[in-house]
Length: 301
Ligand SMILES: C[S@@+](CC[C@H](N)C(=O)[O-])C[C@H]1O[C@@H](n2cnc3c(N)ncnc32)[C@H](O)[C@@H]1O
Image 1 (tube, rainbow, N blue to C red):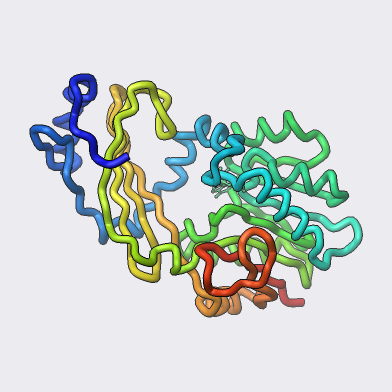
Image 2 (cartoon, protein in one colour):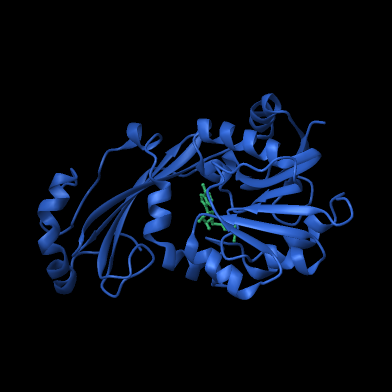
């Protein structure tokens, strides 16, 4: 992608927005739209990930369903392997599974077909409508997993695609508490996270792209400014400024990294034990050599 020089079209596209850019403290230069916007300190605690998800709901669904990219969902072959592996975990007969942040139902449908009793929960109406239209057997609920209130209901809860690390510490505590309540004693909570290896060798950078025909962040012609920040072994953050005729929107995304120890320290006070740590997504034992790991927690009795 890089930082291309402005061609005539992109210069024309940018013109109406230059004042707005200055308001957002983006330096404007003659030949390049921007250099850098310094946000590193604030980045970590601004909470607008949900706004991104609502703003790009349509494009997000398309990304879920695109078999060629491993971004919003894993690729189909990875999903199949993950489902097979989860089915091999020690679950009771007729187990009940809750998939939180289930998106378009790529996993839920497969679990139902394999005999589990499945509920999918997501706050994206768009994705749940798609899931319901393609899978009448599973139960789907439009809702927020940070406010869900199930009691003693499920044998396993899944949260797939590294969404745990996109939550700030208070939200993670809240989520662990709610998942604990939703599980039956001895039930499992399975999710994936990024490891510190993910940030190794990476340094902060900025880049931009012009999308005259629309793109992931907006279906309208727009420009995206990106700032990627790396916080050593702790986390990574991304600030995205979307500039379009309708105005300027600014989003912050972040992902915390976890070691096995950090995760153990975090989940133990919530009443969970770390049952296993695996390489994503095949279920092999974790070796400290991958950028993602999949963890299985067990709720205390
Ligand atoms: C990266 S996608 C992963 C979707 C699915 N797990 C998969 O792998 O195909 C994250 C999903 O979580 C949903 N989500 C994010 N925060 C949520 C929340 N607080 N409550 C419910 N759903 C949420 C989004 O709408 C989106 O569908």
